[in-house]
Length: 425
Ligand SMILES: *Cc1c(COP(=O)(O)O)cnc(C)c1O
Image 1 (spheres, helix red, strand yellow):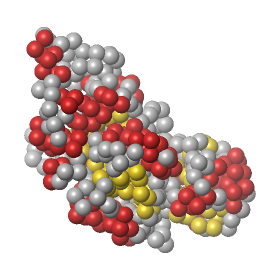
Image 2 (image 1 turned 180 degrees about the horizontal axis):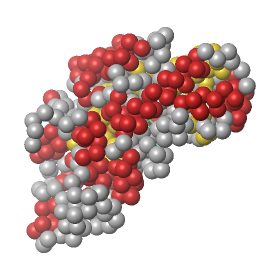
Image 3 (image 1 turned 90 degrees about the vertical axis):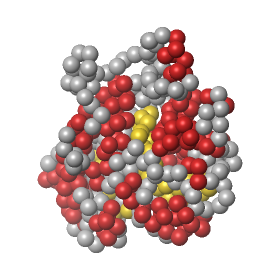
Image 4 (image 1 turned 180 degrees about the vertical axis):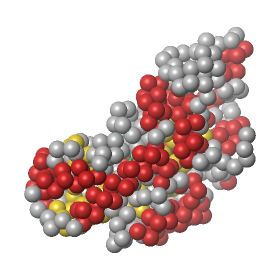
């Protein structure tokens, strides 16, 4: 074996995936089974006691899913990962390991609309409280920290506003307060940005988007850097206090830098149950092999389309961090050197009604609520993904009434531009 680390595309193809030892199958098989046979009674007991790693039951682990976990951990530069049934499940599991009733966390207010609702409305039912702050005001994170704050959450590249957050500065604020930084890296993907290299402790993904890349499967992952010291304070009792569910075992002592992922699996996934199906894991694994070459094309196409829109008379503004005049250009150069992603928004001079008309007139673009597909996608957030938010929250999240969001696919850029040109007429 050579000493230097493998490049991104080599890892995307090979990390986690060896030929099947019993059949020689080169591609990771779909292990479509609900449960696994124990060697004997002692083996069963040690698995249930977490004295030995191994498969017990499909809610908790699956060999196809494990390959996905190893691959994403390698691509993000993390220590370990847990894959779950969707991006929202990943966010729930990520918080479940950190928060107790009455606890708080801080989140950027520039987030995917569904995350704003999950954090601001549904999490309250568990007595978890989210304080939203403007991520372009770095000091706002510091001001929002209280005794009960257990984490900071942000999107590296924010959906849908195209906002790039200064991850390194927010990580420093989190670490000063003895709490982890969680980054949703769905939009950037590890091809464009690896938040752990900038100080993030936990990375979450909606694997539904660019990791899968073909719009065919839901999935989510929680990646742990393995670097956060849970025992530095008494804020994380789930990880540092004896667990009543496992005969008094303490996760941070027993599992060291794997503690968070083992807890997320052995307690979070076991008891909340949002398991990823092995079939979906297989689809996502196939998609991830081409992540690098897809992202390259996605970014090149997005820049061409953004430049076209910037020069169009019916367009009032284009928010794409790859454009020379964009206010996030400097941060994008630092955090997203390979390109500013595939998703961006622009404003129509005709407002809400013009947005509705445009999504109906395009032909190549599909009008739907998703991003990160090979196909180009279009949506008018104010009438769809962000309609649960008040107009004020919508504007804060970059989804005002005139806003149209594009997720640029890997088709020929000239065809995409011609489609938009015709529809704008
Ligand atoms: C889609 C999305 C989510 C939620 O993921 P699901 O897989 O749909 O549950 C979270 N964050 C971002 C940035 C997303 O785009």
